[in-house]
Length: 425
Image (tube, rainbow, N blue to C red):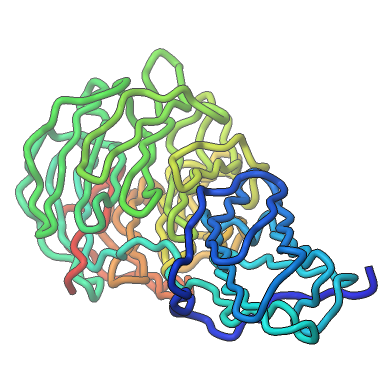
């Protein structure tokens, strides 16, 4: 090989130009090699392997071939163009031509022997997967010294409203997350006994009555969004000194699925959040009543939980997590059992799920706190226990900076949870 021709991106968004009449689209290609023909279009799926694409050895002016990144995986497994003896953009066949950007589409047109094949459009599809980010939020349930079902709504500016009389069975330590792009779900928890019931929240913030539980009853689990509009509940404590790592997937209509065999170290009192637009991360927690960890487990866009990732940051439990900035996450606060103290430090998570080192905390130290997104790209941490029950909140801007305490509104409590709802500001 005497050279390298890389991606030539003439545009950052839009559509491949209209194909010549008679273009015939072929079945999805999953093989590692394929020989293509003029006047045809090919969906190239490189989910499992890279693919070498051999162009025709004979071509005439105006011959056209379209190649499309079927699964947005060319960034992981690239395609290589073999021009099969003909020139490619004026370079001979001794050059390697790779396309390695997710979401690309190539419209190749043959001109003449001098220039050969030319990408008349070489485009990255700008429509990356994303979830509609909720504008408002709801804190709900918790422990005031006894379990409660009260809720507090949060507007798109992060202002917490007064208590709303609780709906559903009073309990502490439920999980909560947004689903369906504009609604929320609270699930599981401790009423004095462990339950698996859920309560759906409408896109106007109205909490529905109890829905009969699905899956193993447990408490101190966590929940996060995944895909574009679904939820995963995972981990928790089932009693008798037993922690679990099982999960339950929730559809975009709020229907909870049956137990899925757990992956990763069983633990409880952990936190979870969405990151990267369509994935989730669970982190930290207590594995046996006395051992706390900082390990994390990522969740794919299809709800598959990965094995343990070595922890970063101070090991703790009773913390909370939220997405922020549209595609990143933040873990903050919690109880450092080894140090015997509550903390306010934070750990930011990149849009690829990499957890950063501790950042000195802002705001009152506490544990038993809840967090969720609001305002499209910001987060709010609220309530908890720090020498006593509190209702203060701390807003997080779109850059992940935690603000000072905001005087609390509503009943002071700990071991509650929170979720976003509504796409309307």
